[in-house]
Amino acid sequence: MDQVEDLLRELAPQVLAVLVRRYGDFDGAEDAVQEALVVAHTHWRDGVPEHPLGWLVTTASRRLIDQYRRDASRRDREVRAARAEPPAYDVLGRDDSLAVLFMACHPALTPASAVALTLRAVGGLSTAEIARAFLVPEATMAQRISRAKQRIRESGAGFALPDREEREARLPAVLHVLYLIFNEGYAATGGADAQRPDLSAEAIRLARMVHRLLPEETEAASLLALMLLLDARRPARTDDGGRLVPLPEQDRSRWDAARIEEGRALLDGSIGRGSVGEYQLQAAIAAVHDRAASAEETDWPQILALYGLLDALADNPVVTLNRAVALAMVDGPEAGLTLVDEVAARLPDHPRLPVVRGHLADMAGDHATARALFRQAADRATNRAERDHLLTLAARSSREA
Image (cartoon, rainbow, N blue to C red):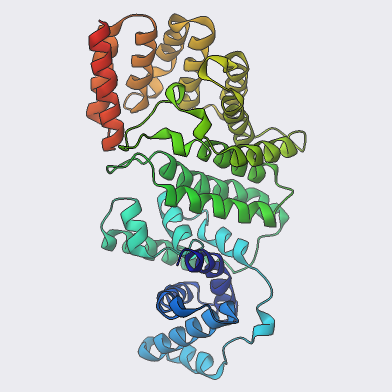
């Protein structure tokens, strides 16, 4: 069934694109596609049809027409839809997945709404699956998705891939949504598990799609490179009991060498093609870590230089916090702590602030302070695996104090 799942997720945005072009109703078409995917899950167990895309379009079209017939307030559209035959196979050749993705990441939406709608409309996930991934009730997620579709409808957005100027303006929002999806998979913000590989895999799949359809966009290539370089470490990031393993302690022989090679090739291909972007710099930092055969061989001066460029470009206090760690590795923990103090006012309640301070205090030999900071961070943690890891660090600092 894994192959069927992959095929359905690949075809979902294409089916949605066909229906939206045919009927001009993103909201109704998206619901109909979800119903068609559920039907396909059952009917395709014994084999995938000869024309899977056509099968899904026909099924979804019938569901949409049935919905129009049930909805008395849509009588006019019922007449138009009932007269229209499902699109013939020969008009299904174009792939409008990117147009669907740009619509799902419409600037009128909040990032949270755009993430949810992207996973449903482009990723083919059910509302229940998305709700489970983000640890909210299914009804809450359904409302979020419904409101997102309503905002798109109210915006009057047409269904088409934006022209080059508008695409360049909206592409950052698309990439940011994919980045958020990947990050939630890479380091889950809640629940018991440290990672959610299904979300990371979905973000990588969608990023591949963007890169394939927009190969000239260097930041799209760089984001995909970043995802691959980070996801390559996934097998070593937790032990057999699901406990987090810090980067310096990971068994690097378990890293996915093929993903690292692909990520580095994408990064190399993006360098020198246009201006330097945030994802390109983040990918470059990840590549330096992945090149090191051991933690001791990490080129920290290069990482520090890259963080300096990223900090200047992004003006993001979290980036500054990460730069403080690199600075500590190059010039000592006191230098890192000084930089943390400079940026702390911009991150008063950020969960990473006590973690970084704790690590740097530990490096400086102030184990009592480190213990208190790790416990403070553990109290703030919403992910059980992260909380357990921080308590382990606190206990280790207690032994060394």
